[in-house]
Image 1 (cartoon, rainbow over the protein chains, first blue to last red):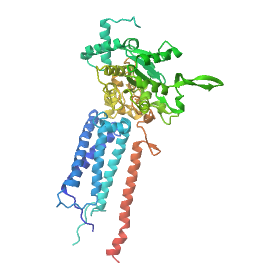
Image 2 (cartoon, chains in turn blue, orange):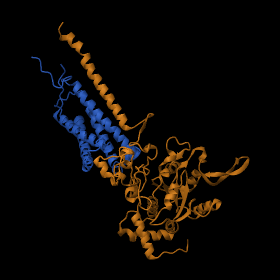
Image 3 (spheres, rainbow over the protein chains, first blue to last red):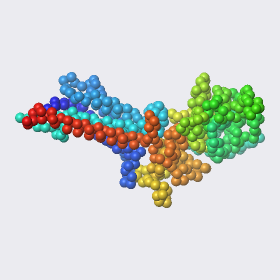
Length: 165
Length: 377
């Protein structure tokens, strides 16, 4: 039987917040330039989604920053953390921070991330990069969730097997 | 020209129109009137030369009203050379440039319309005569002077350079795909010359809106005279005209928000209210004020005429925004040209296959091991 994977509570909570906010970002991000919801949107929905997108991407950035601090420097020494995918979580946090800057460059091209917008080739190209990274961050997180399941004692079931008496 | 006079009433009306053009409040009219008065007294010389252009931006400029083009050319500015409207031709016309260089070095504004061809010594675009001679059909004739040479000569002595239109500013249509002429945008060409160069301000658009061009020139002149500041975005375009997304102020924005899209050009849309995003409108990624400024004396604009915005004011026009009637521009990476969405779906498919293969491997590959260790024999 596989060893039980122990993850500190704060790390679990932070990933839950991250994943929840990411769901909002992915939906609203695709919705903005990908009107796959033709025909039923209401006039207020798009503006609401953009506002939610902003709130969610700020949430993701802050949680990722705190997570990086916790994982690399701030974790108490007596806390057990034997997850083999720890480095994967750090990569997710770094990607999220990059995506936060990209979002700022997309939604506010002449704002404080205007330099990034110009460096990536202007609003059109930044939109393409945003779209591509929207896919990347979505798929990388799906791969992480699957990997986390694959290395857990539950795999290939959804629940952990009962301990043999 | 020198004998023309204006009354105080006419002048204030003119200043008011200029303030409206720049989007300034009425409270700014006295200051603007004073600045224009000082400008008019000095008559800032302008040299307007043309590179790989279609003359569309010149024609658009001729449609300027409030202030009218005659007032601009003769009263506010002193346009010394403009090949389409000036009376002189040939060497007489070119001499106007030489005289300006002698009399107003460091004071004139250089306007360039169209980008600069650099291949074949720049011979794709010439006017006037250069130094030296060449053989042509058995005859010895003077060399033509390429636009690149003109800019090399004029730019260092100008007070400011205005790249008028998308082609001059960013390459535009002449730079789309593999340019056989070595098309180079004016700012890029000037920066490649090295040395101390004047500020270069870009005016997007294909063609540039007369208000955009005139307003930018006035902003530049006010800046040079210390009366105003240049508020430029990261593409060196005036934020007065290129600071807002077309999509934000579009008259069909409510349709976009409601998910009401023109799905087909044959679709019945008698009120012309459906959003044209799916038919290639680039309004969501283009910064310009067309929707509020409108064209042809504020009569209409592209979307109002039931045509999607092609993003002609964008630095990415034309290459990155074509095909014009496709909803999203393609990516070009490692020789693969496709929409980001297609790449995304392919990656999602690959991820699903990878995850599925891993799951099946773990399921099918580990069973014999379990049987051998603890299973029934």
